[in-house]
Amino acid sequence: MREKIFLTVRSRLAIWYAGVMGGILCLSGIGSYLVMAHAHWQSLDRELASVAGTFHDILEPVLKSPSQLSPQSKQILPELCIAGSVCNVSSNTYIHHTLGAIQQEGYYLRLVSLSGKLLASFKAQPADNSLVISTENWQTIVDQTGERYHQVSLLLKTAQGQDWGYIQVGRSLNDYDQHLGESKIALGIGIPIALILISIASWWLSAKAMQPIYRSYQQIQQFTADAAHELRTPLATIQATTESVLRQDTLSELEAKDTLKTIDRQNQRLSQLVKDLLLLSRMDSHTHQAQRQPCCLNDILNDLLEELAPLAVSEAITLKSDIPTTPIQIIGNEEQLYRLFTNLIANGIRYNHKGGEVKVTLSHKDHYAIIEVEDTGIGIVPEEQEKIFERFYRISSDRSRTTGGSGLGLAIAKAIALHHKGNITVSSEPGKGSKFIVRAYANVI
Ligand code: ADP
Image 1 (cartoon, rainbow, N blue to C red):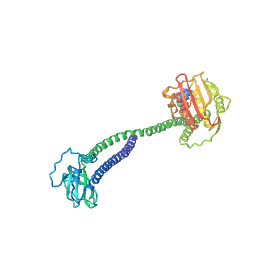
Image 2: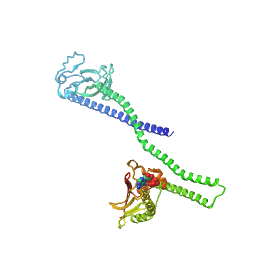
Image 3: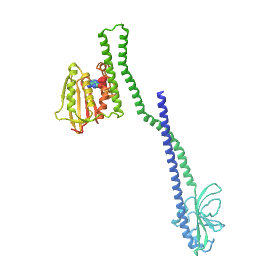
Image 4: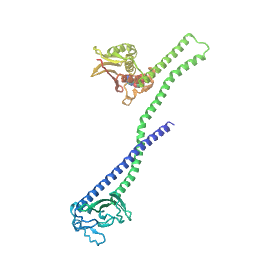
């Protein structure tokens, strides 16, 4: 069920990714195709206009009477083929280099009378012979063979200023169409391939995006299971105790007191657990507006060393300290700071060997107060050093349970350190001991 939900969300995410990226790709592909086609068309227009303009300017001064070709025009364009006469065109006839463009493959030129009759032509021209002069001077023609041509028509005037006829310069659109056709094929093949790659990438990316959600979902599940497990133990003890008492007909005062003591102990354990969970959840949601004031770390640590001395004595541990006399203060919540250091020092005592040591050191560096709690205890293997800050995580479950630990101590310590713009790290060697270092932002030193 859970897997199905994640699979559905992943598929949706992948479809959205693929859809958006595919859409962008298609739009940019089509856009670049249109821009390229437009640029190509414009350069084509410019070239035709320039060739036509050049011929127009050269021919006009030598034109005498309307629709009549003067001998000089034949000199300018020796290859000009007069309509109705047999054309003997030699391909290597010299043409002035400014007219070179017209010699390119697919270009043609024709001179047309005002009534639309072909007077002369130069190079192969459309097979339609449609010499219709439209009001627009740009035309795109399709000849009988289906080939497309683009041409420009300019009005020619005689030297005396009379309308002479038209000059038409055009070119075949074969290479243009072929070029665009190739681009279309490239897009037609490229876009589907890109879409397939995008779909694969989207599927992979959506898995990546889902990973943190999946991990936190698993953490929540684990947390719920752990919390339920921790709550179940004292509840089961209370239930067993009350059931066994209820089964008895009579109860001595001593037995009643013992029963109540057990229930009270378990009740305290439950209350502590619930308090810890509430504290963590408030810190997570940042709703915990704990009162903040300047806190003297020297005083807090000295107080705690005094308070925890009986526990250390009972476990045969020597408490040592290196706390300077100059006060080191941080802005924070005193209650929380007490809690943080109690957890660390108490752990140092609990997870220690008889006759071991716990040393508490206070110093400051830059703008940070540094508190070190070092013990000569059982130590923590490297693989566990990160995990011990997770909620309900316990390495030595049995030992921790006998000491009343629930696995929340270090998680709370870390949350408090983070709330004081600090952090908490551990370095440890199994069998030799551990060192917990708390760095807290000390704006008042
Ligand atoms: P607990 O309530 O079980 O002590 P903590 O969150 O305080 O939970 O610690 C998590 C686990 O980390 C403990 O169960 C213990 O195995 C390990 N641990 C914590 N402090 C020390 C220490 N000073 N030395 C060795 N192991 C430690």
